Length: 136
Image (cartoon, rainbow, N blue to C red; front, side, top):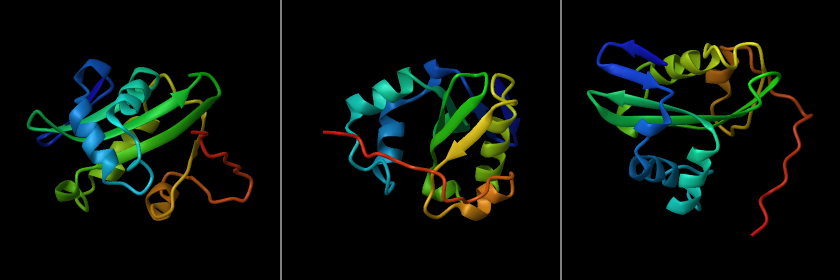
């Protein structure tokens, strides 16, 4: 599935994901900076992926871990720095939440600093979320 807005496109076609770009984007985040390319490659293979492109170049990435029935975990949403603060993050989230495979599912995500963005879509901060760090 594809969505278009001006010169940008969002696609759920996993074959269009540029592993090098995604590894670089995630490597610049507080949550993904320790993920080597082989780990990024595996998470792409095992997720419903969304790529954002501007004029054919990948500028964003996000993924869902989902059963496509009742549960979806939104993870790794990132947009290249020079494209931020232009409304693309909000549009990216809209595309993901409106994907026909997951529109009826409960969404969960974890963030330190994007509460305002996700709050616009009905996400609420609560104390029920528990996490376990990955074992080495």
